[in-house]
Length: 83
Image: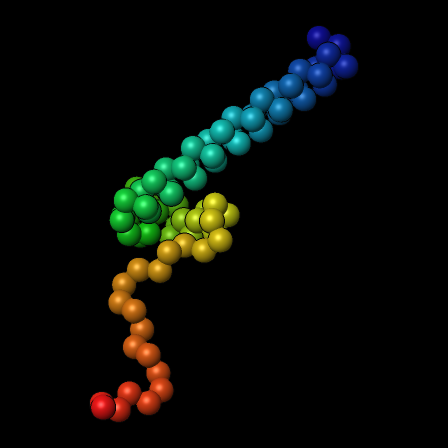
């Protein structure tokens, strides 16, 4: 194979790899969102997918403005005197 042919072949392989990685990342992001919306904890999602919880949050921020907050609502501050 001549050098120009080898170069074209290598570039084609790189482009194919980039497309495959893009598809994989989209599928992973969709799974993270689906699992998160189903109520699974971030730590459980991360462990199952073999990524860190920070990666799960990063994907959630990329997909939506901010991950939904879970847990108790914080108590309101200020004067809470009974009436």
